[in-house]
Length: 295
Image (tube, rainbow, N blue to C red; front, side):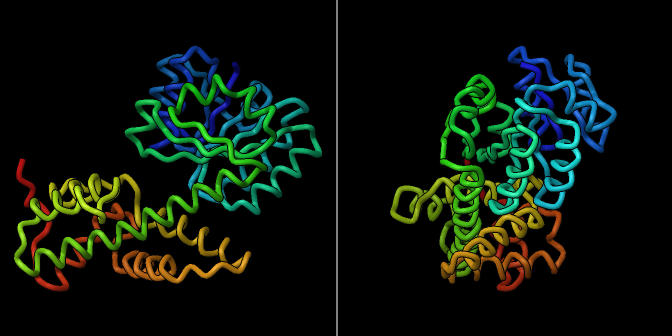
């Protein structure tokens, strides 16, 4: 297929690389041209304008930071797209905005799907992402070869925007649990518990989770590069609480996690990984959690 891909950064770059490796003709665009160089060297065509990419692609995919960028890029693309094309937004986004974009696409005969992902950079590189997809089911099924290039867990949720409902639910849970996990490690450290033993206890007990196992290990190893920044976490959890407000659902627990994340955002952690906020908790009670991992 002739696939256009916009946003070839931390997540988009590996996803685009897998599409190219599977034999698709790939057209790419990013305002940071340096991110497109590896793809160009592998055989992708770098487009100088969004309009060029739109005209030369059967399917156009976006992996962008958030709603503001998606709205701008989608409007630009739809000026040049034509009936029969498919526009896929892989960003974590507002379901309401996606419905607006879908209506605009419908007026031109362009189908719009949302396909946010989970699995992080590792999953993007390995092609094992979880995809949560909303939109026309026939178009969803038509793009099965595309989904199979980039994910191993493919879910169809329903109408456009429903993929992002699932993604926001997932992320609000993940962030809330991450905040709780950090506090649990600090409490254990303050009480003198061996954190390696505590990590194994929780991993094999009712408090365990993928987030505890992977995130807890990363904290104890002090391997906390900015893979998912506090800024991005605030954006995502804010979209979740905004959606809940719109439909009258009380998210008291999640709202508290959002308050904590925004506090950390304002205290200098904006561009650090969400797990790196453990540094502030360590300092507040004078304990050491990071770097105590024992193989």
